[in-house]
Length: 424
Ligand code: AMP
Image (cartoon, rainbow, N blue to C red; front, side, top):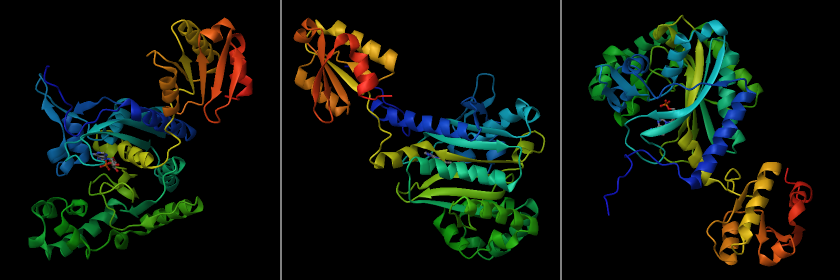
């Protein structure tokens, strides 16, 4: 036998046993976004490397060591996208979307690629569902974004979530805070991790994103951004919190939730789950008013979030889930070869006239095996077609839930499902 070729570490196949749950989830997200007036945007899977090094930042783990980057035949450096915000903003600028409307509400469901160490909930190719609203700087726009993020989980029946929220204020407030942070960290310089020591001089705020245990311990006593917000920043943050409160969305103020990149400002938030192990971050987002300008567009305020779909699916799989549907509501059992054309014709009518999911047996198994298949698939009904039935122009319809059977004429079989069984 030839040697098997396996997939690449950190990537996964979406198998038929799971694809239904994915499709259902994605379809709920598409409908949900449409309810909120957001439109899908789809950008290419690879971009110029510079787009990400400029937007995500040279000193981040993503750009330093996690990107899949290669030199193309013409010498240009290209990269598989590690996230989508940069691509969406590039597209917004390039296609002059700001001229079409003062506010663009967009969302995406697409793959991202990061060369991280794979574990439960962390892959090298993963899927992000994200939302970006480009053009508004109001607190209600921030609230709309958090509302979408929180309601989508609620709608899918995910409980035990924690929404952390913070404001990192305007650049003015942040530079004052940055000075205080540097003053504090200078006292611990030698104990900081190597990378944080470098960042202390280049971009101290980024130290707050550090994953090093040593750094996290030191940061416990560091000054908090919340003490450095100016009046406008505080008022804006209060408005966001009040509106969220009015909507019944519970948040936890977390003054340590800070993003160290220059183009972030104002509100940041993160949604965590206690039920999926170490990789508990489901969704992260916030305001990034400087990014459009940073990438060569006109100064335009923006806010958004990105959520990991694999982690959401992990949570959905742990529940007894009504989203996991069967592949056929009606399974048609053929008892012998002569029954096949009848079975196919009945299935064809039921699918096309009534829109019912119907599957016919094509393995020619025994009746017992076919019934077992229908049970395993949670089919609601089986239709049994055999020689006797054909002779009398009748089939048996079996209700798989209560075991009741009736005889039905082949010619008006649709009526049984259209009317009696209230399928629609
Ligand atoms: P980030 O862009 O790092 O803020 O990521 C946004 C969301 O994407 C996170 O909250 C996770 O749910 C998800 N995510 C990030 N990296 C990965 C990964 N390597 N594998 C699976 N999901 C991820």
